[in-house]
Length: 413
Image (cartoon, rainbow, N blue to C red; front, top):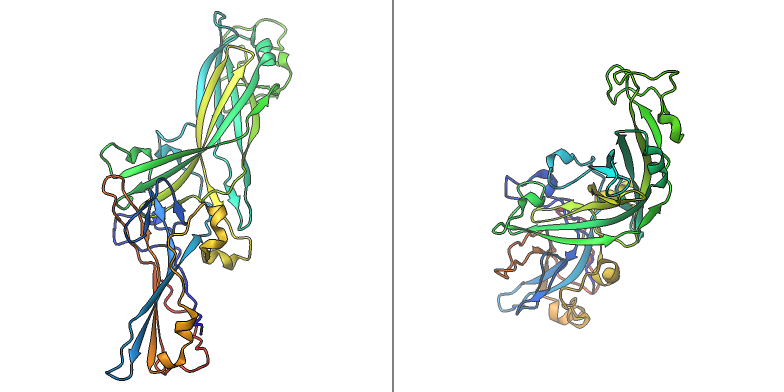
């Protein structure tokens, strides 16, 4: 005999801590990182570990006082992958030590050559990496800008023609976890030797890109203000930086400008990664580290780091985004790198099919989505246990030979 039922899993986990920010109450996906510790009861702990299980408990209420029946329990581990949405671009001003969107350095043609000027490399936050339910990789791109403010136009032309650029990039995977609720969106400023927040830092190496030639253009500054907000013209010809006036101009009247170049850099991840999320005690954030090396002149490196979002979108209609994607653990073991948390099985067919054993008992079914647990290195104990859903189904009549079908969805938390 089988007893089907339906349930709804909330997109957020209610928190009793009033200091918990609203955006850190998301339902986190299944995750297990670091060394795994198994206690004497067979429960698995890691740093961090987020696991879900469908737990059922059947209690039998006797119709007579002399009949008793112990409850029957079982659980089934599940993989949970919530759908996520794109957030607005990160306000990097709020994280002064977290990101570096622009770097400037003085450049020379050789070690003992005179200074050519200041080369500035800037980069913008890319569009998110977007995964649907079946994709195992994703692609986006970021925009890179180069700007050379030359001190003298004499050697600049030859230096720009000889300049070659190579780009090395990584996706930085930052997993924050804590023994207490986050008071704000976690960042590296929350980390300390005696603090309660820890960071697991991983890196995904991306393809190296070489640019032997870069298309440069010259942009003039305003003659009156010398500022950057008014451009009188631009050209890609190397000799366009010289003045077209018939006679030499005084330093105060000579037009000035800068050499600029723009190009895009692809960010291709050839594996499936977890979405960007922030829950009460675990958060997953991403950045892109770009190391741009300039050769052909005196070799210089520019290291930048920008925020990156990873979104798990729905491949079906819009209504599908309202609910997380849930499936039995065994169906998604490979793609999620997640191991089964227990070996408990469903009720045996023999015990539930016996009509003589249960004919005088009323089933009381308790359903619970299992908890989020986190183990610290020092204490090695469970420090979070959040019950996500609990549903009670009750039937007042006795069981018969035909299966009983429950009415449908009950008390989605």
